[in-house]
Length: 217
Ligand code: SIN
Ligand code: FE2
Image 1: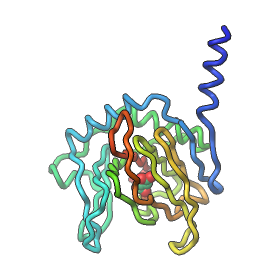
Image 2: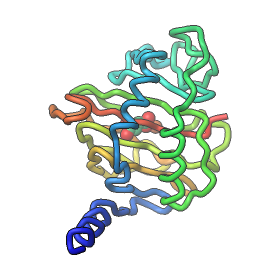
Image 3: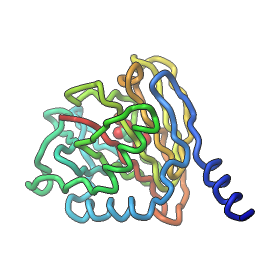
Image 4: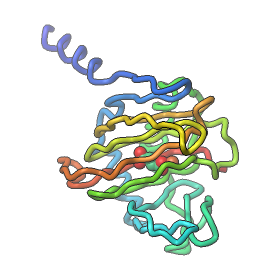
């Protein structure tokens, strides 16, 4: 009895919400069981390999990337966009595993965005030193849906700024299991990730895996 009570209290204190800005927050420790999520990610990667995308400016991104869902995020000399076909395989992107859809919908709901059904999940793998410079997510057709961003593996510092690139950005340390959700008045905030420091996580090794769920089409 005492043990049960302690257990459920412990489970509650490991998850909490941290507001960042109106419409934007961190769900700390939201991913209670990451193993099936990472297994789903591995199944996707087996069908649609991680690869370095090249920006329209010709820079090779430091993260490696793939996608699942009806639409995948791609970048090349022609620009950033969503595409139904993976240019690396010539096939449709893998179906988004149910465990990922459910995680994204639950996180959105907890953050106050009900009815979120993602059609695109971008998988970013950060090896030590990889980073993501400040950008807005603006290739989606409809900005009413939020962005749901899941952090797994080694920690990183997320940056979330204003509506213009040169506005000062908050630095938010993200750990394994944290989920950031931004939408509504914060939907177009610039955001990015500082170079990932060396580390190792029992489930991912020396990597950070980020899953970014969007309603893109
Ligand atoms: C992104 O904005 O696509 C990635 C954000 C992150 O890795 O946390
Ligand atoms: Fe982004």
